[in-house]
Image (tube, rainbow, N blue to C red; front, side, top):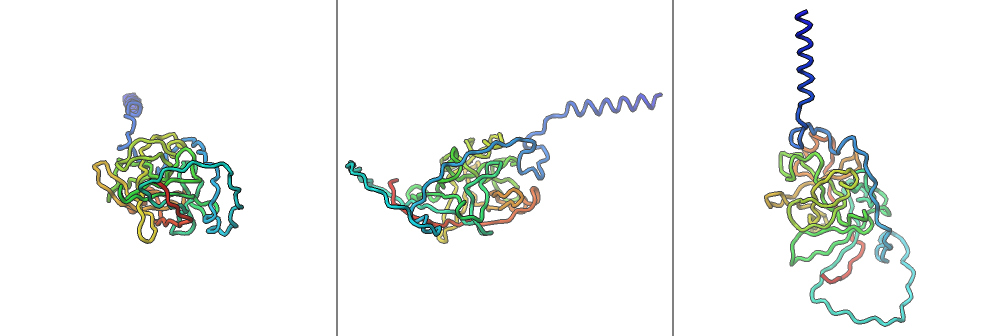
Length: 271
């Protein structure tokens, strides 16, 4: 009888401990293998209307040029001359594993990969060296409400900072335009799809002499870091992390890749 009573008291104590256990926080819960939030119903994110290709873009894709347009007889007022200009470049992004960054998104609102160049994401940027070395990549045929190719803080991150020894990561997704600086709350395609608010950066891209697009993010202390881009084949998406080893140890297989800008045309536009 005494033994039975002891068992009942032990079970009651265990049940009380379970019921009163605190809710795991972002920094204490077991996040292993949870690259994305679980048990959520994602929402579709709309794409932009198809943007007509320029003749240069059509020729680069092996298509015939656009038919000639009739000139309007309506006189147009002369526009004031702009004093400063930069070269706006438009093109696609080739991935080192083969294929291109796709104009379509995953169920979590991230840009994916495609081997079909006709489905490639078209981007445009204008580098003004008088302002800085990083720039925004505007998407021309991507996610309509999120017109910049940016970095969105990972759901499983312990903080917003990227560093050696940390598995912290950022999704590559559609974002609003942000000033150069640490990630801050902002609208983005991942949050729209998953219903989880995350911080974003858009002014993160640099271009090398070989046309490689290299990300440069800003940590919370203001220091810039140059992380790696990895391809996660299980989700057909990309992530940005400073420690590929720590990332793969926690989330599974991922392959380091490089992005290369493939120019389609260039035009001089006002700054």
